[in-house]
Length: 394
Length: 182
Image (tube, rainbow over all chains, first blue to last red; front, side, top):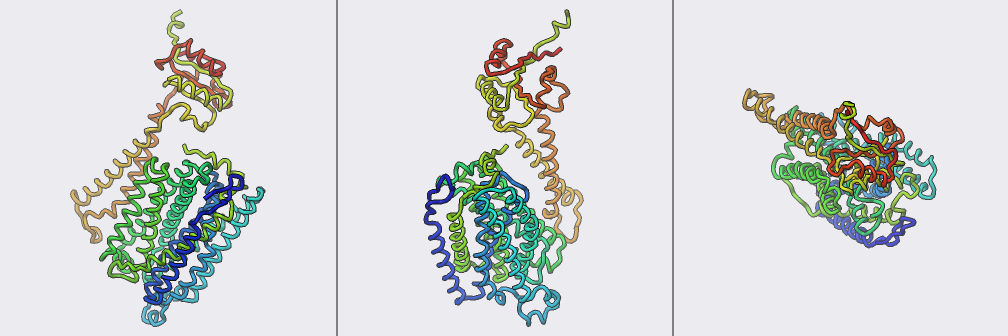
């Protein structure tokens, strides 16, 4: 990989893009074979793998909007990277299509005979029905893609020459955008993940998903930044001070995730109402208990103590390792949310879990890399760029 | 006559033109081996900690210790009261229900950390302090406006009124003053 010091564009984007594309296509083809073998398993695996990548892109959208709203300066050098990550959302909208065919396999509430026998599902039918589900899905993606495209357009215009109105416009879009984001992500996680068990409900569920998603996105951004830096790209612009801040944010969101996860568990444990506790009971019996404990220690305790000292946050090697670990745990978290519905009696790892992760993941990475290579790696027109470059922690 | 004898020099004060000159001078003072000196400016200056040769603050360790005491104390208190001293069945849950203890444990950990951060910060800075010899200098009021100062205390083993004075002057220090205390 090489890049032009003047335009901040990659002149040579390396082999990552093509390799990811091949892996993605192979993953999707194998998953399609899996669909023919065991359709139910395929849809559950695909939902998990797909949602993993979707959540990272949504994290990118949030980070970009937050950057604009608060007028952040330290993160200006990172802005283009988070914009590239959110830029994958239109492709992810296409990758959501297989899920539409899986509504019957995935969601118990979509069967009219099941609803007919179930008072609770009848009461929820106004919200949980196939038509409204698809309408909502379209609305979510419309909101996300419109926000992404609008922010992206102004950002690229700014590259050619800054006008003060650009900064203001991006802020004006982001402020209502972040409210829409909160609502759509909350309901999307209710729709796609929580309604897998249509009897169960948790009002904090959306925030829980958001916490994990943003944490995962920060880890992905850290991995990208350090990967670029190791190849001598932007290593003068994105310095150890920015690594340190990314580390601090990952530390903060590790705590935030733990806070949400415990709050969800705690109230259900305290209330001790069977229709709520059953969800945790499924995940505390059989081999799912191992995964639950793995989340407690792997998703919270380990990152907490690893990211605690200043040294690990300022060391590219340790920071890369913990970021990759956080990404892995984010996938385990989603796996733990989705798969117990299909395999209530214990963990049952299928090869489709892996192909359905690599399939959308390969396409995600390929498209992300196309975006990265096609535009300057920094928002070169942003008046705060120089301040961000010289940013120092105190 | 008596009064004059009781007046002793406690330090030297030198003024510099701008933040860059102050940082530069601080580096020189640090390299000369002075330990008991301080810089005064109307606003924080980037890189000043390194220029003065300051090490990382020990405050983090103080706060960490306080957090440990807070969390373990809260957990211990709840365990002892509800499992040992007065075991009581509450909504059919075990005597030692750690889940129920988490909010108090967390809150007390945060409380003690916050208090330790404040008190520790004050203690490490030698505050509260009602007076300091630099305030004998009328010129020093400019440290809140446009003045950049270095003060070196006589307690420093390297301090020698004449030599330190000429050293500060050689760094570009102006308005050199001896700080005197009765």
